[in-house]
Image (cartoon, rainbow, N blue to C red; front, side):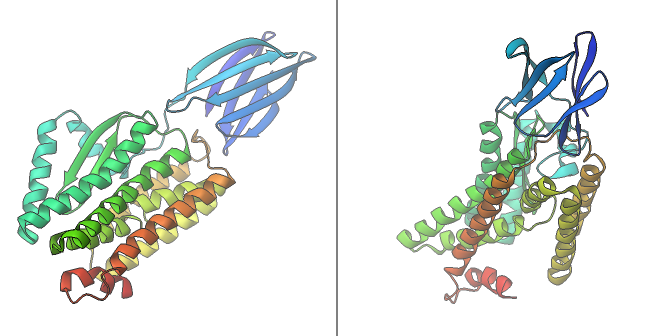
Length: 340
């Protein structure tokens, strides 16, 4: 994928991304190669003169700034937009495409929210449905806040009956770190909500809050499974594809195998549909891996992402485990699932 094309001393100067490497060509010859990162410097000779090309990703935008210097003197500096990512991206992959038709229809959001509330009320009770919807909104709001932090335009939150919710965006991602943060902030906000419900139960003794805490923790824990298009799958994909594309493919395939095993064990037919959607996303990602402009995670970012992922998982398990000794059937259900 070509990022930059210019002319220097009447000779073509171009920058391309190949295998997560920035390849600089001068006079149609490769003169510099650096790992694709948020800040990169290329040094090369142009007509016997020492030249330097510096590129920097502008935070929260889809732009990069480049600076061309000859013999230490800046000759040109300009900003340019990154090209569109060829692969389909989104919080839940291809399922989001169906909602693009309704991106400005607030009535659809209200109708879906009402349908979710009615469906959960039918399964449980109206009071519990209200708390459960609040937990889902908190989860999706975490995604939205992360998008806003990176300057990514959002379409809002869509609640889907008996499935959960979606946080949709208008812009494309530019780094793997953005994918990690946006994906994990949903379960992180879900953890804050579960802890708030747990505290409310400790203070008031109302079992409604206890049920919301454990059910919310279980739903977020399910969402952290390393299966695309779930949030956990996006985190694992960003980490593994930042190391080696073949490793990313292998890890994602293992995640799908785990998802199929979970689907078979618990009889979750809907999860199979999610896995099929995730498989399409993996295929798109793999086929366009040599053209992707997404800045990969460095070694530090990989460790931070993995640790953050494990901490959020541990937090939700701790909330569920706090009710391990109770006699209430609903409160012990998540613990029984984890034990199995």
